[in-house]
Image (cartoon, rainbow, N blue to C red; front, side):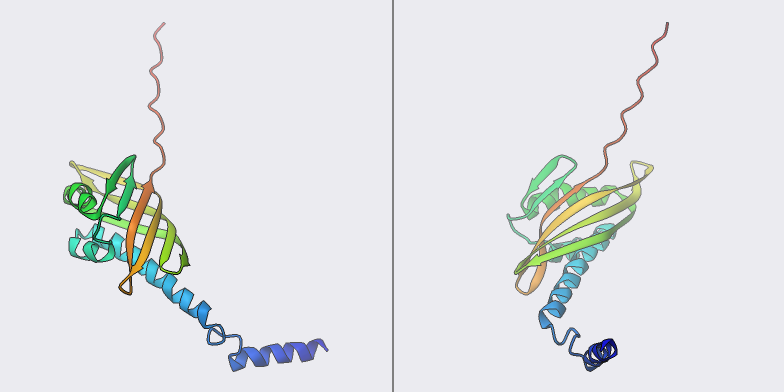
Length: 167
C-alpha cells in the first residue's frame, strides 16, 4: 500500500499537478516578493552610487513618504530627498551599502519588509563601517512597487568608560 501511495505522489509531482502551475497564487505571490526585494536592492545600489534619478523611481514622490533614521524624522519625499538623502550621499565617498536577510510580506497593494543592512564609506576624512536593522513599507502604484516608509536603526554604541577616580 505504501508503495502505491508513493507511486501516486511521484506521478502527480512529475505530471506537474503539485507544481506552481497548479497553485498560481503561490507563484504570483513569489513573483511579487521578488519584485519588492528588487526595489529594495535598487534603492541600496542607487544610494551607494549617488544615483538620485533611480531613487526618484523607487520611492513614492509625494507627501506620503515617512523616514525615521537615527531618531530623526522626515515627512514627504522632497523633505527626505533634499534635506537628508542628497546631503548625506554628497558627504559620503566610497560608499558600500547592502541589504541582507530580507523578509517580505504582501497584502494586496501593500508590502512590508524587514532587513539587515551594512554600510561603509569615507566621510570627514575618516573611514566608517556600520550596520543595523530596517523596515520598509511599499505600495504598488501604477503597476510598480514604491517605497513609502523607511525605518532603520543601528545598535547603540557602548557608553564611554568612566574615568577612574584618582585617590
